[in-house]
Amino acid sequence: MTLLTQDEQQQVADAIDRIELETDAEVVTVLAARADDYHYIPLLWAGVLALLIPGLVILVTGWLGAAELLLAQWVTFIILALVFRLPPVITRLIPRSVRHWRASNLARRQFIELNLHHTDGATGMLIFVSEAERYVEILVDRGISGRIDNAVWESIVEAFTVKVREGKVLDGFLSCIDSCGAQLSQHVPGTHDRNELSNRLVVLP
Image 1 (cartoon, rainbow, N blue to C red):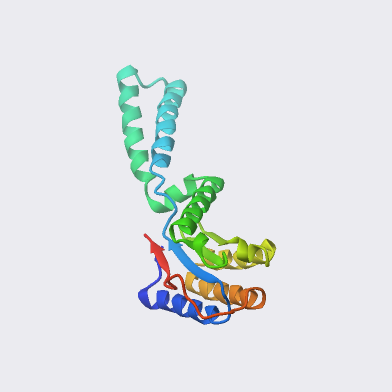
Image 2 (cartoon, rainbow, N blue to C red):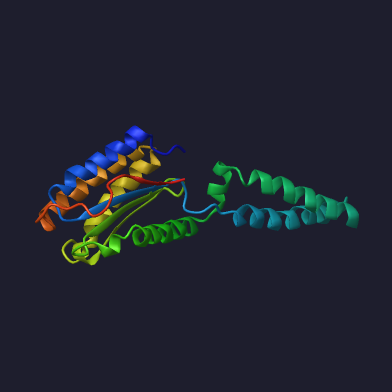
């Protein structure tokens, strides 16, 4: 997993510059490497399996005594805890609902922290991506949601999510920004020249 280069980040910022020339919306983009470190997940799985596997060996074979059982549980726990911390492994251990819940919470925190709820006319828009979770979300303030149906953003998010799964994050951002710009210029057209928020891509490692 590789976040965008400086040149690619600039392409995203330039795309926002272009669409904001024709709309009063304030568009901010955020790219997170992951929504959470999920430290507890490897420990949880390792603990459960460390209790089960040696116990099953005793039931099937009767090989282990009490001291050997305790040692086997500790060794199993340590090995599995290390293996389960590997990025390709841990991603598969986390239920999709948990991954998406964490990513959605992070998106909402970013909306508040980046002051998208304080724009003139309540026209803030956040385009949020979390790479590890393969998660994309568009959040808009009431000045936009009152003019554009949420189903419009859902279709754009769906197309962007496909790009993220294919590893084409930059292409996804540029296509998404263009699609959003087409809707915003029509329903939230520009009425005055302003730029309240930075157009640079916010990258969360």
